[in-house]
Every structure is written in structure tokens, then in C-alpha cells.
Image (cartoon, one colour):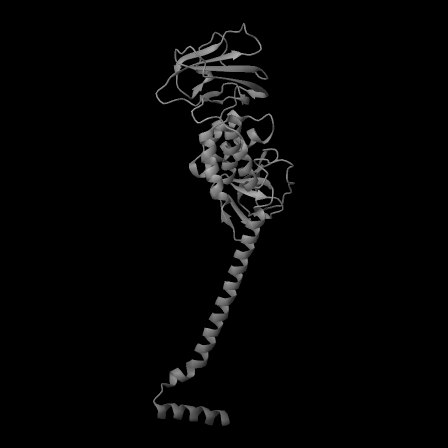
Length: 335
């Protein structure tokens, strides 16, 4: 009865003061709701701040950690879930530092390119990745922290900007009908010849007044069109009808080179081809150059693309490409 009298007393008081009874009854509930919302907001903020801080710590740590592999998206279903963060759909390759935990959700697929060997493998979720990689004794373009790679690239000598370079094939190639490319001057045509370095009596393949790129099969020859596997060849290039040679380069066809080998077409396959070409010595710098030159701009500016461009530019002595890759690398390495 006391409760009833208190209630009616409160009701009577509210009528005397002119306050709406509905407001009197809702005040405690409204205050409680606001408190719940406040605590909920604080909790969410703490979780977000904690997750963001964890991600930043992970990113800061990654700046001084060797790269174990690279995750390469192959389609729209390429999704990864880093530690401390939500699942993210990949549109460009991303590095996987040593000891970083990554999950591939069910139904997702990515290509894993190992930094030490360049070997690519398809990973289909659900899967958990945790790879190890030691820091190399000397800077390695695919493994070392990006800051070290930038310093190594800056200290390597390159040719003067106006110099002539044969860019493919060079060093070693897995193609028996490779594309021949070089740094051509605007409006200038070139004479190109390919000689068998081991047998000077074999007629040279040649073409007059050409512009890059040109397929080896387009050169005139009484021989079969394709090259032989595991054999040394020499490319000689001069400006059309000139008396001096602009450039000479030797290359070796790989023992497993086949006529069926063709340059890939998709971004994922192109960047995997370039990584495989540059991961071990002797490198296939010319093959890597061909693949990298066909990447979409956002893939070429991604970390794996930038590292490969730096390495190829240093090995081929390409000052323009080196400057461009260093600019992109500096952006990626900024805090």
C-alpha cells in the first residue's frame, strides 16, 4: 500500500506542477538508455583503437622484418584476414613478412609467391599462413626490408640516361621464340641480328629497319624459326644502315626452354613470372622486364612490382626505370 500511496502522491504532485506524467515515468528509462549507449560507444571505440594500434605496431614491425612471401590476388574472391584486422579483399599483391599470421577464409584463393625461390603456389581457404625467413647477409631485392632495398638500388651504378640498352632477351631466357626489345630513340629504325655464339658458321637471323618489340620468328633466316634449348646466342643491334654497332648482348636459353612457352597475359601470372625470373641466379632479367612492362599501373606500383622493377633496372642498367621505381618505393616506405 505504501507503494501505491507513493505512486499516487507522485502522480498528484506532477498534476499540481503541471509536468506531464509520461515524462516523469520515462526519465529513468531514458537516462539508462543513454548510459548504455555511452558505454557501448566507449567499448566500440576501445576495440577500434586497439585494433588500429595493433595494425600500426604490425606495420612498424614489418618495416624491419624480412619478407617471406607475397600474396597475389587471382580474382575477385581473393580475400585475406590479417591479424588485428578484418578480412580484406585484395586488388593488388601485398607482402607477407616473416612471422606474420594471415588467414585465407573459406572460398577464397590467392597465389603465394615465395621470396627466396620465386616459386608460386595456389592457396585455397580455409588456410592459415605463418612463414619464416631469415634476414639475408646482403641486401636481397625480394627479401630485405624495403628501406634496405632502396639504399642498395641507389648505390648501384647505372648507365647514362642517353645510353643504349638491350632489354630482352638477356642473361637467360625460357623462351625459344623470345621478344627482342631495346631502348630505341624516337623516330629511329634499327637493324637486328641474332647469331649462334657457339658456331660462327651458322647463318645469322636478321631484320632491317625494325622497331621494338620484334619476335625472333620475324627475323629472316634459312634455319628453323625457334632457337635451341641450352644454347648461347648473341644479339647485335645498330641504327639502320649505320656503320657502328649500338649494342651487343649475349643470352642463354634455359635447359627446360620449350617452343610452347609463352609470355603470360594476366597480372597475377605476369608478376609471378617476373618474381620467378629474378629470385635465383642466373636471373632471367629480360623475361622479367617483358612481364613487368605489361603490368597494370597499380600492380607495377605495388610493393612486389616496385621491388622487381628496382632489381631489373639495376641489372639492365636502366636509369629512367630506376628513377621511376625509386620514386614509387619511397612512397611505399613513407611512415
